[in-house]
Length: 478
Image (cartoon, rainbow, N blue to C red; front, side, top):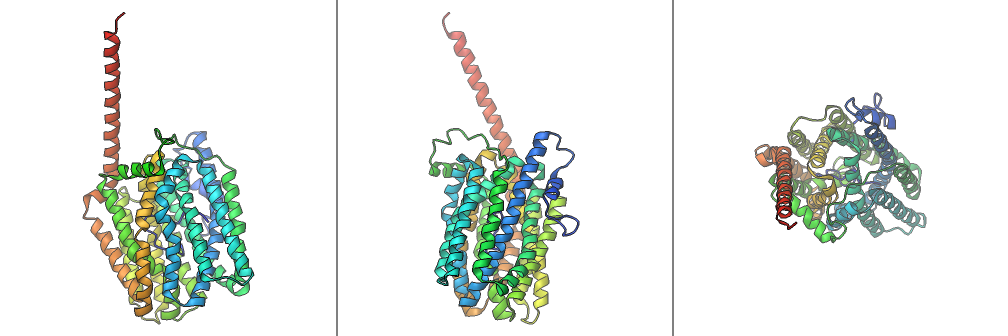
C-alpha cells in the first residue's frame, strides 16, 4: 500500500528489506531494538524510535496485503492476455503518475502535514482496490480497469513515498539511516518470500475479489498505526508557504545544480530503469513461455529473489555498509547485473539455476537501495527532502515507460530472455564505470564540503550584517 519499495533503482517494478527468519522476527520489538543503540541517550530519541517502530509495523501488514494482491492481479493479466505488451503497459500505467506528478508532490509534502498525507493516501488507495474488487465480483472487469486503478494508486503513492521518507529522516538518528534502509528492504524481502506462494494458493482457492479484499483490510492497519503516533514536522524553509509548486521544484533543481555526483547518479538510475525494469516486469512471461512453468514456478522465483533481499538486507541492517556507501551500493549493483545476464543465457531446463541467480540478484538489491537512500537522507537538508526526493525519483523513473514501450514488442518478437541479457550487461557495465568517476565515488564528502561552505558563507553574511548595524548605530545622532 505504501511506496517504500520505490527507490532510485526500481528493479522490481510490479513485484517488489533485514532480519533472519528465526532470530529476528518482524515484531515491533525487533525493529525498535535493532536501532536502539547505547549512544541513543535521550528519552525523546527513544520515544521517536518507538513511534517509528509502530509506523513500520503498520506498513509491514499493509505491504503484505498489497503484495498478495499484486501477485494475483499480475498472474490474472498473464493468463488472460499472454502478452508482453500488456504487461509492459500495466507497468507504464503504474509509473506515469510518479514521473508527471512526482516533482510537484514533493513540494506539497514539504508544506503539508506528512502524517495526514500518509493516512489519506493509504485510505484512498484502499478505496480504489475496493472498486476493483467490486468489478471482479460483478464479473465485468476489463484490463483497462486495472490500468486505471494502477494510475490512481500510483498517483496517491507519489505523495505517500516522499512523506514516508522525509518522516523517517526526522524520527531516526543519521547514524542509523543505512540500518533503517536495510530494515525497510528486509521488510519487503520477508513479504516477498511469503506472499507469492501464499498468493498462488489463494489464487487457486478463492476468486480474485476475495484476495483484493485482503488489501483493504491490511490498509486499515497502516492508517491506524500512523494515526496513533506523533510524526514531527520540520521547520518550513523561508517563504515556503508563499511559493508555488513550480518554485519549489525549481528550489530542488537549484539544490542539485552543480552537484555533479548526484546528477550522474540520477543519470545512471535513468539508464538502469530504461533497461533493467522491463526485465522484471516480464518475469511472468519468462516463466510461462521460456521455462514452461506455472503460478507455482513464478511464486518460487519471486520468493528466491525475496529471500535474497531478506539476507542482503539483514547484512546491511547489522553491518551498515562500508564507510563509502557509494562503493557499497555500486559493487552490489554490478553483481546484480551479472546475475540478470546469466538468467537470460540459461537453457530453458535450468530453472533451478535461475532460482539461484535470482537469489543472488535479490541479495544485492537491498544493499544498493539501502545505501543510496541513506546517502540521500544524510546529504539533503530535512526541509528540502520532500521536493528533492520527488525530483530524484521522477528523474530515475522517467525513462522506464520508454523502456517498457520497447520491451513489450521486443519480447513478443524475440523472446523475454534477450531483455534479461541486455539489462544485465548494461547494469553491470554502468556500475563498474561509476568506480572511475570521482564525483560519484566522493559524493558524500563533496556534499559535506558544500554544506560546510554554505554554512560559512551564511555566518560571514550574518557577521557583515551585524557590523553594518553597529556602524549605523554609531553614526546615528544622539
